[in-house]
Image (cartoon, rainbow, N blue to C red; front, top):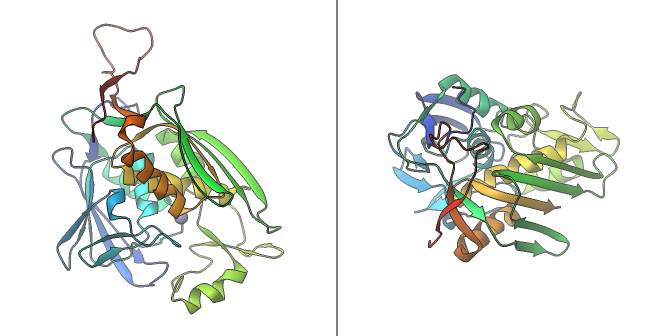
Amino acid sequence: MSIWNRNPRPQTLAVPVSVKGNGLHSNLPCTVRLVPVDRATGLIFRHLPSGTEIPVNAEYAGDLTRATTLVKAGIRLQTVEHLLSALVGLEVDHLLIELDAEELPILDGSAEPWVSAILQAGVQTLAGQRRFIQINQPLEVHQDDKWVRVSPSNGFGLRIRYTIDFDHPAIGRQSREISLTPDKYRRDIGTARTFCLEEEIDFMRARGLALGGSLENALVFGPEGPLNEVLRFEDEAVRHKMLDLIGDLALLGAPLVGLVEAHAAGHALHVALAKAILDKPQAWTWAELPEANDSRKRPEPRFSPVFAGTA
Ligand SMILES: [Zn+2]
């Protein structure tokens, strides 16, 4: 069986794997070790110097200005979204993530190095059923003319429609839609790099941000176009926003079934949507995938909620 066929069971990694690099904002070195778990624990960070464990959940969300931060007991884990995006994209929902510093490595600015590490380790199945949050009522969060909303989708999975509209000639308006699968994540989303405008760099550096930023780990758009030699996609910017959204939705603590539409959003609105979903359990139900080799031999897989969410 291909590991990327929809597995109705929870997945973790097969063996541990480590990734090293410097943080985008702090420029400090960090080693991350992805460690398999033996039961369905969810995703849990462990900051080794303090021993603090932070479950990946919106209740621990901290500063969301330029990256997604998880905070607990004075420990601030910064720029968690690209690793989380790769894990959600590849359907690895249960893992211990050990790290020796407070900001995750930026690597090449995309999720691709995380995807490679996950593929190198391989995945294994855990006992039990994979549980999904299946949306049955629309929910929306907005700030000025920016918004994110979720609504029920036709298929069983996560569908994303994202639009950005930058008042900047090198980016402009970009819109993309995807029904997420691990293959599409790897091909169309995971390699899109983080980006910023050249005019923002001095401001960010003055605030102690982006100290590790360079053309090796970010797309930088100047007035005439990207300063990088090549774009990986013509619409790499909106694809990276989708990558970020997928990572931020990991803060739900379970995979999402629904249509998420976002307009000019960012980490704060992505996480606000996750919180809105968790705060309104009557808007969703827990659902499971049926067994692939179900002896009842359904003509097509059918997906139905198994019990009402009561969280
Ligand atoms: Zn990002």
